Length: 309
Image 1: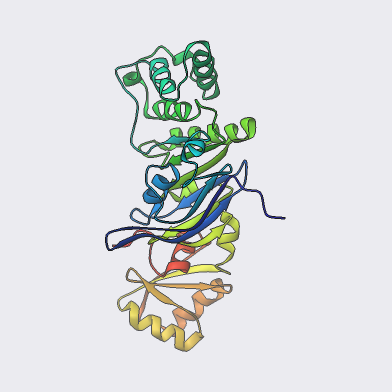
Image 2: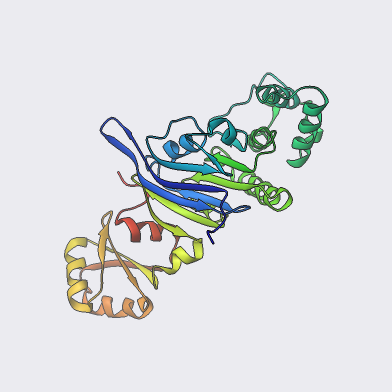
């Protein structure tokens, strides 16, 4: 039996002229799952988001959301998704409720049906008492919650958010993710986010790491970190390339140079520190030891830093 899914992306590729923005991207998102697409700016997240939101036609591959095909049933697919854009889409000169009402009109909602949906949406994100406030008086975090409420107005089965924490302070970011988690638990909504924030990615049930248009790895954050197979040594030296070669020859390790520092993954990293200092006392400036992070996973899979010039 095939695994049930709310979102299925298969062999999706997209080009802008000679630039390959997406290259054979594929993943599935289970119902009620929070799935994150993690990657640096320019990695293909925005293009993929626009395809999922039906703002870009599919050049190659297939996209299905809640059983609706993005090629043959665009209207049906749009009826099942809610979209929260990275750029603000609120009219700051209108009240919170007025923004919701005008958004509902775009979905053909009017009268008591719309009023009920607006009241339910604002209650869901804890903004009932702010419904009459002008949007320009709200904090960044509250504005973002109004954006989420708008995205949920049509009661979608899948909510797609592009960089949802952009511009939010850490407290507002935590609040937003608390609301998203509650939304999934209370309404069974499937949530798909794009993000370049490691902290934000940790809130997701599963991740797809996107780099240069390709999914290079996927799984839970814990599973991805376990691929490292040990701790991380970061070594600063005057000649990183020379030290890297010497380390590989001396200890049989797979060290590499990333952004001018030597990086080494090892299940025995703690014991290696003394051995490295003793073997290369004149070459080593500093050594730092750390548990694997999602950025380490990115480097492990791609060979370069998350933010690569």
